[in-house]
Length: 508
Image (cartoon, rainbow, N blue to C red):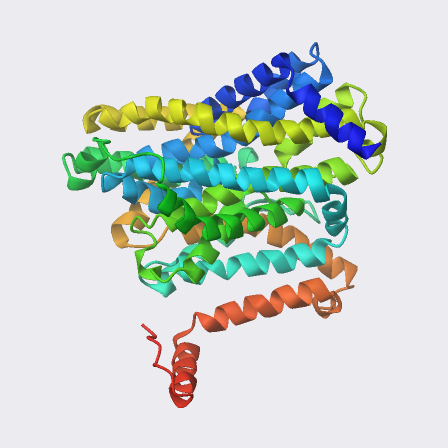
């Protein structure tokens, strides 16, 4: 039965109408992803009613393709304009934009597209082969385990703090504090809202992200016209796709980051933004050129892009196998299946195997379509870098305002975005790193909610985090990660290495 469903799904995807739907979905996803403020979830929700009249296989293939393409599309604006098109592209800004400033925008975009293909294919293979097995892993992650994952994520702040670690921790703590704004998830008490009704739902993450990255860049273009960075980014003369040697060099990083994306996508409540920072941190940890990260290191572009595209397959695993959406976008996709009378869950593969495997094959085909269409689409987008600074800066501001307003149709979000833009500009001027603040904003609400739920489960006992083997292991890894980043431990390890007859390691 399973083999027949797999073959039926493949034949369904290869039908011209479904291939056309996948191509259209990819084009819409690229457009949406490259526009700041427009998320894949929003696009899927808007496109969903159009698929009601389609065959279920055609409609769900288009939506899945849109989801996948939007994840890559966010990197286009991130690299060219320092403006993440989607939250998952925030990590790509750190090294992608400096590469563009060096005149390597084409290379950065090519690395992003290639890494997205590798991560997407990995997640597609995982979907097609071990989806039911991986789905059971999700059942082991409750509030206790999710809190441990959040703690592990917070330890990334130290390694992402360029320059002063103290300033990085300050930014991270500010992000965690801002993440608590809104209604308490357990008691329903309003926190730090200042009686402002618009803040009761918390700070919209995408609004904050647009402000933190877009507005400071526009201010810099206005106040410092004709600087070296802007001159270099306005001319694209380098090769886009990596050579065979470069491809083999980036493969280990891509595979590791893709695996991180798949595993992160499995855990409900996380997403491409969390996976991107996890992958970026691990790429920096394993790289022999740690000092180059944040200055235009290619590995810093490959890691987040491979991870955020791999999240698509990972997030679909619990959606298909258990009926538990792994992300907001997959929740909308699940709604699309339910509209057609198909209920995701443990019986989906047996009762609707043909539709299920059509979706899985569509994700794989969408990666191929993304690579082909992405090359043409990206080359068109590259022309934006030739726009003069005096024109580009107002365009960025206008796009940011439109993007912030479009999220909730609220002018309050526009003012909030501008406020975060001012904060990001101040951070840039005084040398405080922005990525730790973003990490705090992402993980703050997750940590807050899971901590309270965990303490309720453990009846107020902190030992509840040690009773779970998964949580205990993750917390130990987090502790070792913190200790590893401290100068004291670094000097101690260097002494041990000296005593063992090795070359002392630098602790700077």
